[in-house]
Length: 222
Image (cartoon, rainbow, N blue to C red; front, side, top):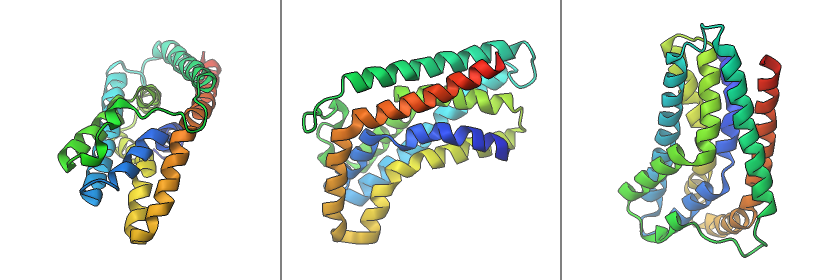
């Protein structure tokens, strides 16, 4: 189990370092109900990431990835394809990155300052589960978990560990706000500006690194 956790946590890093979801958490901390909204968003994000990985793991397990020798070929090629998609996405993101101060706010963040806790929960759930980047690395993580052929209880443990680790990024602003109180405002606003300005570059680097790792793992087992 520990070996599988060690294999999937680097993939979870791609979810953890997600500038826009973290920036959304910061914006919620300046909403009408800051801490309830922020806590609901984190909860939704955690549940979304965990549910998506659980589904991918279940799908991979039902194909007997961990027990069928014939499955090794297609899972290796799947890793290569997913890795190539990330590398291509990383290059595209870097080439199309906006100049500092010119990044546009995503439509799903529109009116975020007026969100309620239930809406924050739903948005967090959707971002955690349906973000394309999260889906790609979640698929790779699900295959890795299924390949290990762990007992169901241990598979659940790995999924939980992945989801919790992946959520630390969006949790960080809430922890800072609770720990520092009103003194956190200037710090969080500075984080928000930096995250918006550097979103494309950060995501591009993550895509390239994780993509290269997946391609390497796939080639090693072809």
